[in-house]
Image (cartoon, rainbow, N blue to C red; front, top):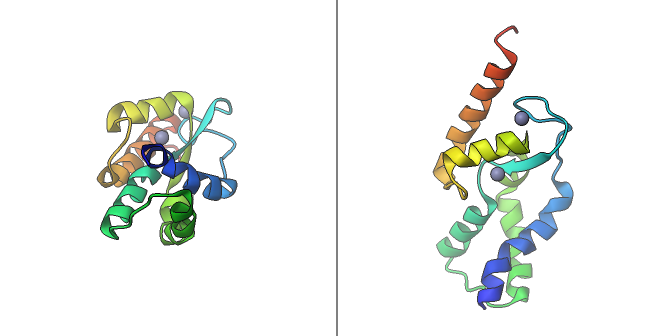
Amino acid sequence: MSELKRDKIKYIRDRAKSAYVKDEECYICGAKEDLDFHHFFSVTALLDKWIKERKLSINTAEDMMEMRDEFIEAHYDEIYNQTVTLCHRHHLKLHSIYGKKPTLVTGPKQKGWVEKRRIKEYGLLE
Ligand SMILES: [Zn+2]
Ligand SMILES: [Zn+2]
């Protein structure tokens, strides 16, 4: 049980990951190496919320398999679109501000931070 609890996110990742499209460069600074994929809305937090709200009892791998497609469909935007590719340095910086496991309410703030950093990096020439 506790094993499954810790690994539930793995079932979602295994299913969703194939469609994650990492960009070729960091959105903030344009670095092309050491790139990470960041979700503005933590998939783990979304999953916990979904399970709690629906009072689902997830006890087996089968329980997870059964619910994951519905979960992914319901959170398509957060999982696939509300994301950004960052270099490791900027990814760490973001998490140093918003925490290791950012809460869902900070999603829009994280986006604002990323946009601001990008403008700073590229200047306001355009
Ligand atoms: Zn960067
Ligand atoms: Zn991240």
